[in-house]
Amino acid sequence: MTFLKAAYISGIFLFYSCSSQPTRTSLGGNIPYGDSLKLSLPNEVKTFFPLYNDDIYSHRILCNIFEPLFDVQDSSNNITPRLAERFEWSNNNKSITLYLRKGVAFFSDPCFEGKSNEMSAEDVKTTLELACSSSSLNQSSNGLIGKIKGSEDYFYGKSTSISGIKIISPYCIEIVLNQPNYNFPKLLSSSKYAIFSKKAYEYYKDKILFHPIGTGPFLLRKSTPTQIILAYNASYWKYDRFGNRLPYLDVIHYGVYSQSQNEITAFKKQKIDFLFEVPTEKINSIFSPLNEIKEYKPFAHKVHVVPGSRVSLIVLNQQNALFNDPRVRKAIDLVINREYIADQLLNGDGIGANQGVAPPSFYYDNAGVPKRLFDIQRARRLINEAGYGGDHHIPILHFFAAGNDIEQINKYCSYIIDELKEHLNIDVRLHLVDQAGRIKAVKNNKADMWKLGLNPDYPDEDAYFGLFFSKNPNTINQNALLPKINSSIYDFNYTQALQEKDVVKQNNHYANCDAILNEENWVLPILYEDYIIIQNLRARGVMISPIGTIDFRAAYIKPL
Image (cartoon, rainbow, N blue to C red; front, top):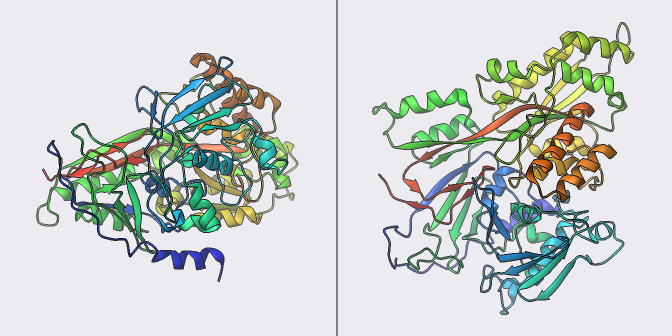
């Protein structure tokens, strides 16, 4: 039995025996304490550690267990305090000092051995150091390494600590950067870099994956292959304006629905309160039966559309010698009709990604990025120039795709495969797998190309373009799904964007990066996708972020 399986099985029962929570009484306002929220997951979540989990579904859970140092406001894109009360830049803008909130406690746990469980600068330092390490627990190394002074030496084992992380006092920590980076506080709003306990990490070591000890409004009560239960944190630090300690809810219950139709049926029957990632083509079929009293009891609901921050793309394997020829990569890109996929195949469920990797948003304007072309004749010429044609065929390619809505994925992946065969005579075999199957195929070099969905973990251009920086670590454990763009011009524009304070000039540098990604064709963006979320309005006070995560701190249940 593997470590992961053995530790997970033993961890399932870890939180069952929690003592009953005290009765809570409101001090004012009309929001009631108690009740439960019912949510869905497409797959089992086996681990609970921000730096290790890398999908949107698990981070929707983790962002209510762990907390980052900052938040980003939805519309203004301004930084707001969370675990850090405030920050100060040095005169040269290469050093940032963080002042931590006092009195914030981690969940009670045997790892504290009767000692203080208050969050301190030691916990922040441990979190940031692990985020810059080569540990297998760290699947998020592309964000901080190279930005913090000494982080690269630490990653490669040349030093035992990071010189740019300095504890000033128990509630104050200084971070020295290699260069000015005005958006660095936004980076620290990522749920990946939520703060965990140093004592818990030292106590549980690798098994911390199954012992989520955070400061958030909810803690893990129960985890099995079919359900996850979060219970409210009775010691949470935040209060509402009436002096009521948050959160209001007693419990958040997650059930696993591996088939999207089962999830939809559960929502109609009010067995779950939210539907996530709803395909546009299915909205009418969801709503019409809600008004048919004979089949379903009608209830008030709301549709949230989070404008397309997510991009669906295809990655070409840099280990495959075939793709070393840029003409082959460009030819594959040219035969993909993105407008047809979005408008015809998927009935408007997404926007054709014809203009760069990063979708347009309130923080990024891609209008200056040259549009991608759909040009079959040019694609055929390029393949012939590369030496493929007649009796010289390209070997069969293996295409791996993972995701929740298999019907939708199969539809447009099959279309791309058909186009490659018809126009370029390339045979491709499609493998529909789960996320674990995809990463295994990539790491074992069995995948020639794979579908990948990029979900930014904080609202900033760096969340996209930092992924392809050539100095990012790229090992079997770190960033295996992403290619490196070995372009000095890309690296120059990326580093200039980080240092630029003027938002227009910064955007221009990122747009240059986007254009280079279009030219290189190692990643082929297919669709910009909105997050469509449907909410039963008995659930109130919910805050949905621009990147699709949900804050349940102030959520409560109050039927209409």
